[in-house]
Image (cartoon, rainbow, N blue to C red; front, side, top):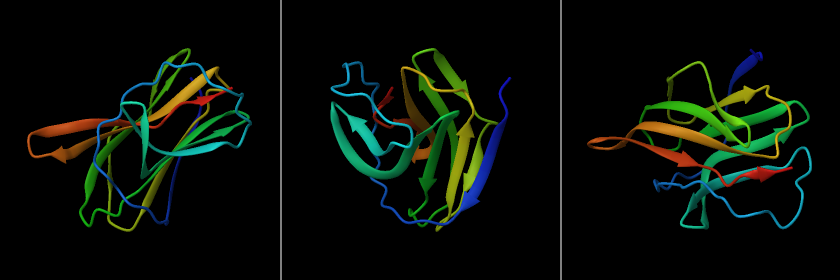
Length: 135
C-alpha cells in the first residue's frame, strides 16, 4: 500500500454547501503536473469552495479550509480512473484551519478529490467532489 502524509496548516476560503457529482466528459486538454482545481462540480458547473485537489508527479493532494465557524467531521477520498482510494478515516477540522491529505498513488488518467462532511445537513452527511484533473 502506498504511503500517505497528513498535513495541517492555515489558509483562506469560503464554503458553499452544495452536492457535487462525478464528471464523465472528456477533457479538452491534458493537465500538467502541479495543476490545482478548487471548487465542487454541481450539474456540470464549478462552484468555488475551499475544497481543492492538486496533482504531483507521484500522486494527488486534497485540501480543505474550514471557514464555517464550526468544527466539521470530515473524510477525504480520491476517485480515479483506476478506482477509489481512502485516507486514514474521518477527522475533525476546526474553524480557521486547513486540513490536507496526500494520496501517493502515482499519476492517473484522471482523479477527483472527495470530501464527506458528516455535518453537512441536520439529518446526515454529504459528499462533495472537485472537478477531475486529467492527465
